[in-house]
Length: 330
Ligand code: NAP
Ligand code: F7E
Image (tube, rainbow, N blue to C red; front, top):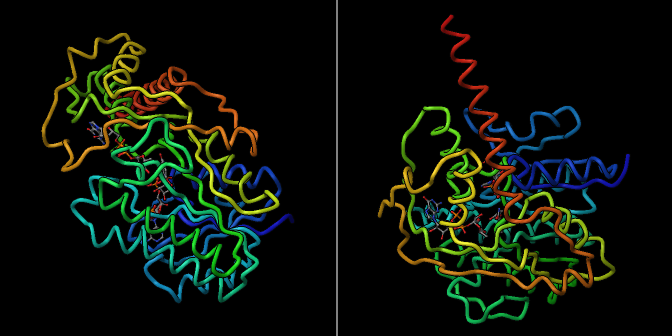
């Protein structure tokens, strides 16, 4: 068996891809999962017999300590968080507990159990918020615009602080939006590709969205997850921006996604103020020059390829669901 690694948030989009990559690299992978009345292990179902799942919750310091003691990891990837920006406005205290204080519990756990553990923190481009310069790099000041972004900014600075205060090998990856067919369906990209597939198969007629003018720097999740591992395997800890360097609007995403399915987005998309946010992040675009130089960062999937991959996956999934229903009716 190779090195032991622990992933928090293993049931999420990034956690599932990271587990695949670490298993392929020969690691013994432990995943932290929280108790739920229904299992949420869909994204890691295909890996279940090769993983060791440890029950713990970022809200519970003792369980975090036990998870670290049980896994005895060389590396910890802290991906668990309340990661949906609108929920952070409706549940700001909970978001702070998971996304900010959860990181304190992980870092304190590492100091207690084994300060040699290498730690990756999932920082976010949302910390740049109302961006003070364009493009954004590791030196761009933060201007968070949501309770989620504020919580991530706390977690980011705490990671830097524990590195400087206690000499921990702690790195923060400042990742710009990254998507895939495994993206949660509430995020705008997946909401669009799922909506396109449902409209194409006659299950819906319209798709209600919020701000179509918002611009993001979108990339393909497996490319980004690869860089988390690269960061922890450098000789010394550091922080890196990972981004495509291109920015596109939600409207452009719609145009390509609907066209892929032979549809005109203007006939189906309805703007609904319910999806506008109390404060918006209008435009993000990252400068990943440092990661290109130090980590060999080179994304494999561009914007159009990303949109089309996601639409194709949802078209195929909805087609299977529709034919399953028809079989059931026969
Ligand atoms: P995601 O799909 O929402 O997954 C979040 C994970 O966190 C899930 O496994 C969830 O478990 C777990 N979790 C939530 N609260 C927890 C708690 N109290 N204790 C233990 N586990 C908990 O997120 P993602 O897109 O993979 O993103 C991974 C990380 O990167 C997150 O920290 C996110 O904020 C950050 N990030 C994401 C992006 C992006 O574009 N995707 C960009 C920058 C940073 P359940 O399955 O039990 O809910
Ligand atoms: O919104 C606009 C919305 O929810 C993107 C998380 O992974 O990436 C993600 O955060 C944009 C926003 O992602 C709808 O107003 C329009 O401007 O897909 P999103 P996000 O907020 O950028 C960062 C990097 C993270 O760290 C986060 O964890 O799209 N938008 N209409 C909409 N957004 C949603 N969700 N739904 C709409 O109907």
